[in-house]
Length: 435
Image (tube, rainbow, N blue to C red; front, top):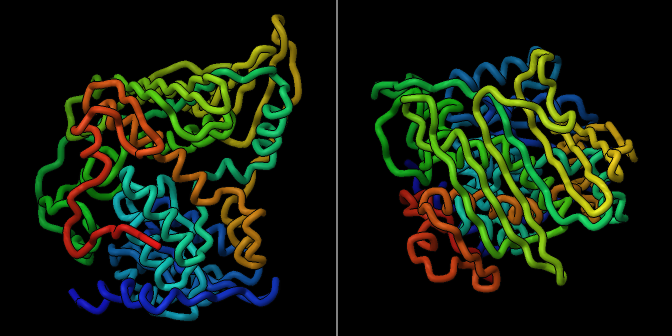
């Protein structure tokens, strides 16, 4: 491994990050997409539809995936991007304005910080971090290097859901005291996979990054990495963070005082480490009011609720949110729709249905540098992701957590606090950002 790539971030930080601003709305923004097998391919598709946006580079540690995406972009009539396996080489290109990250969770914060240090703006897929420590570092890096960092919680850019939040603040369902987030998503068993040689064309060392060295298995690689603690955060940090973010947004809260999670890995005998059934309860005490949030994860046959989901219509998933107030309730699905039901008779109230485009909002903000127009700033994303991490810590310790937000710790629980960070595999270490 080339030492100069590991030191590039420190050198840039010492000199002060380069600030490239887009001069006018007609200037071309040059994007590098990083991690493009799954969700990253959606990034490519979204940017490809935009005027004056060029996918200048594609980066993936799997040569077969990289070559496929390069060919697809070229075949669609666009200029063939540069191809890289190592993000640090991408960041040396001073003509690239921003990077769009869709790698596994355990690399998000490290890669986003590298990009900020190199003077690049960042679109970072959810969750923005793998642990509590990282949520603070990615926010600190965005601030220190004056970078726009957009979190991939797409619901923030839905006009209908933004309208729904205004309605909740205006009191459409009265005093909102509780939110429920639903993540009922069909997930079959992953089975068991043996140790095997690393596939040809895969840079496994780069893929592991900060995570501990482990023999290669197919279950710890493409997509199924979500279900291993070394790389993922279970479905709470996969699909669930979208609903978690909406729940916190609607309740208008930041930090919980109490977190309690219970669940398990039921039905299947396989390699999965994370729970496939999980119930989490949060208490909030902010602004002189007490509020509660509940979160449910299920991975198998289930019902839909309050019209959320498409039960019986070729979609077994129920993904969304419910808000309860003194005068009614609101139901939000995961696709940009909200409905309200008012009074004891549940009479229909205001509703809306309009999805949005989080990538387009990111590009708009890059052009203007006007952060007041940013729908999903990293500061908001980090707060929601902290709820994911606290729930997983509660589940793994088997205890209710008393969270002290001022001191950023769990009161009287050394084991829980030790899980706020990890032992990073050198030299892929997430730094503490100061100043």
